[in-house]
Amino acid sequence: MTLLGKTAYHGSRFILAAVFIYAGVVKANDIIAFAGQIANYQILPYTWNYLVASILPYLEMLCGILLLLNMRVRPAVLVLFVLNIIFMAVLLSAIIRGFDIDCGCFKPGSANPTSPIAALWRDVGLLLLMIMTWILRYVQQPAETG
Image 1 (cartoon, rainbow, N blue to C red):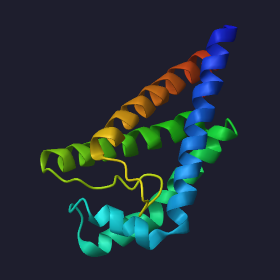
Image 2 (spheres, rainbow, N blue to C red; image 1 turned 60 degrees about the vertical axis):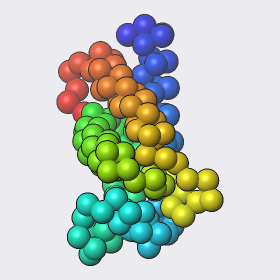
Image 3 (cartoon, one colour; image 1 turned 45 degrees about the vertical axis):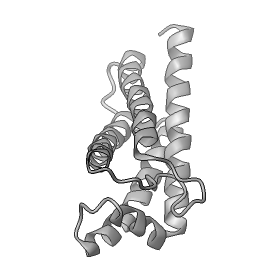
């Protein structure tokens, strides 16, 4: 792999790691507020909001840590990719239904909420970084499965 390819791979991997570790830590610090943000989307039954809020931050942190350590990169990216696609569908649902709610991604209950449209555009960018990381990981080490 060229120097540019290595730089792009490590850069995208570090950005994704930082974003998801940070997001996971912020959500894990206030699970109740995060469950409230999930409930605002009006998709899950009430008790499931707490279940998702209790699991999702730690899954994001785990995937972020794996990316940071350059271990099991492709499985971590795959999990984040699936989560991102699901969240994008939820955001589209909120936009279509006319909900003006905070996405709940980084600071549940923040004074500066992120609109569903802004969150959707941010997730498109994250999705592109995930695709780039996935492809460049294969180019860097084609014989490895992780």
